Image (cartoon, rainbow, N blue to C red; front, side):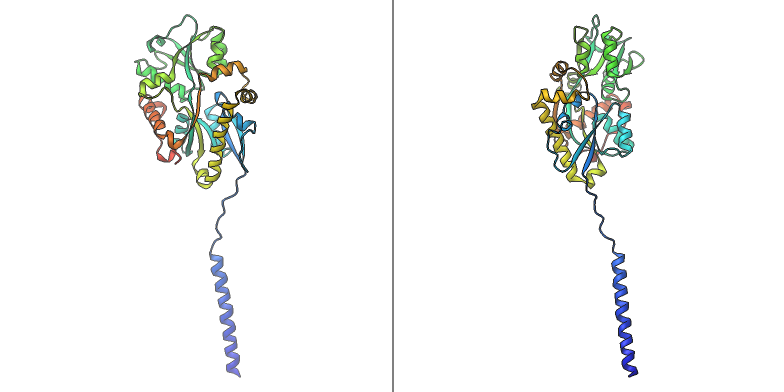
Length: 330
C-alpha cells in the first residue's frame, strides 16, 4: 500500500513539474511585435509653386484608399527640419539639395521621386543688362530663402565659375520672395534670382525681364538636358522600412495628384489660391515656365546623382557630403 501511495505522489510531482516547465517555456517565448496600423500620415509641402501639384490631394480629388494624407505647409528649410526631427511628419516635399544636407545631418531620408524640374530664373530691372556673369560684379542679387538653398548654390556656382567671389565681388541678399517682388517693382532691387510664380509677379507690367534661365545654364555646365532635379517627395527611411505599403500608397497618390492638377488647371488653381493667394492669370503664365513631371526615384537616380555631384564640385561649401545608395528608393 505504501508503495502504491509513493508511486501516486511521484506521478503527481512529475505532472506538476511538467506543467510548470511548459508554462515557463511559453513565458520565455516573446509574442511577435505587430507593426501598428497607420491610418493617417502627414506630408510637408513648401508654400510656393509646389502648392499647385498637390491641389489634387488638398481638394480630396484623388483616391488615397484607407490612408488619410494630411498636408502641412512650410516656409523655410529650418521649419521643415524642425517638423521632421520632432516626429510631426514622415513625408516631405523638399529641394533635393536640402534633403541631401538633412540626410547628412542624421535624419535619414529616402527619395521616392522628383517632380520639379524647371522653376528658377534671373531677372533684371529696366536699365540693367546681363550678357555675362561679369555684369554682376559690384552688384547685389536678391534670392529667396537663404544660404544652402538650391538657388543659392546655383548662384554661387555661377559666380565662382566666372571668377567672381560671392559676397565679395557680388553680394547675395536673402529675403522673403514676396518682399523681393515688392522691392523689385519699386526699383530698389536691380537683380533677383527667383522661382516662378514670383518671376511673373515681379516682371509683369514691364517692370523687368528674364535675363538668365538657370536650367539652360545648368545644361551648359552638366552637358545634359535643360532641366534640374530641383525638388521631390521624400520619406523618413525608418518609416519606409516599417510601412512599405503605406509609403507606396502615398507615392501613388502624390503622382495622381500631379496628374489631376495638370488635367484640371482652373480647378487646381482655385484650390491652390487658398494656400498661395496669387491671381490665376499670373499662375497660368508661370506654369508655362515650370516643368512639373513625376519621375520615380529608380528612373531619375542617375540624374539626381549627377546633379548633386556637380553641385558639390562647383560649390562644396553648400553640399559637403553626398548621399549613399540608401538615399534612393528601389
